[in-house]
Image 1: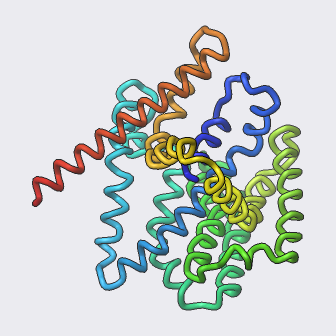
Image 2: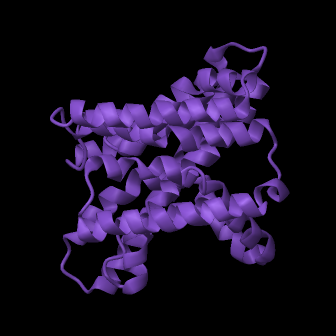
Image 3: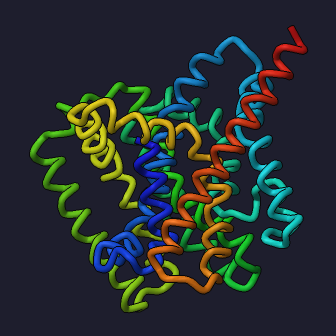
Amino acid sequence: MMGVVMLVIMLFHASFGVLGKLGLLFSIYGHWGVDIFLFLSGFGLYYALRKNEGNTLTHFYGRRVVRILPAAILVGTVLYSVNYAGVLGILGMNLWYMRTLVVLYVCSPLIYLLCTKNNPLLFLLWIVMIAVCGVLISVPVLKDTGFLYQSSISWTLARLPVFCLGMLMAHHAVSIRRMLRPTLLLFCATVLILLLVLHYQRHILSSLSSYLHLLPYILLAGIVPYFCIVLGGLYRMLPRCICRPFEYVGRMSLELYLVHEAVFRYVGTLIMPSYAKFLLAYTISLVAAFCVHISINWLSGKIFHHRR
């Protein structure tokens, strides 16, 4: 599932004009893949935190750092050395998603506690209220403070509900049958239509303010689980030989996220046909991510073996 979503995000960032109207579709709605990532992260972190019960939070945070920091430093150092990232890029913090992920990871033990100790509807209502009020306050306050601060705070608040919903659904083991109730399906279909229109207005007509650009992501949280159901259904229907490449891409999705935007920028400056740029950009991104993934695994193995 993460492999499919990562490829969708890459198509959102650049199809180099070779996909026609399909590429336009990805350029408008492909960034929804980030919300699926955050939902899956919340879902997975719930089980990580439940498994961590009895251990210190240092153990939990240590595992998150080991997962993110080595790859971010390796990629960031290379990009910094060739002037494709600033100093923050050495830690991967030049990417808004990485900053948002770190904030949500830091807050996840508190979210886990609130999620498991409160009524689910009340918990979700409070999270939505915090997100809405936070966006409405932070956008004007941070308007002139620079992209870094606005994306770190405003965009994180807008994506808070989808992350929390992932934790909530994991805690209550919400079944697909419960999610397919007619009333829920009707509500989600209405929300989906509204979101399609709002994001079209934003990306094609540029007619929405920053408020309306961020607030729809709070609504988007409600339909992300249905995207996951569809992807999960397709996974079970497809032959194993087709699913396996997507599984491997999913395992190195962090590395792909770290490298692909810089690669796309570089390839975009080359003078060559669009289809050649497309093939070159995606090939370099996949190879570079694979090299980083293998290097980090090798280094982790060496450290683990040395400790033993």
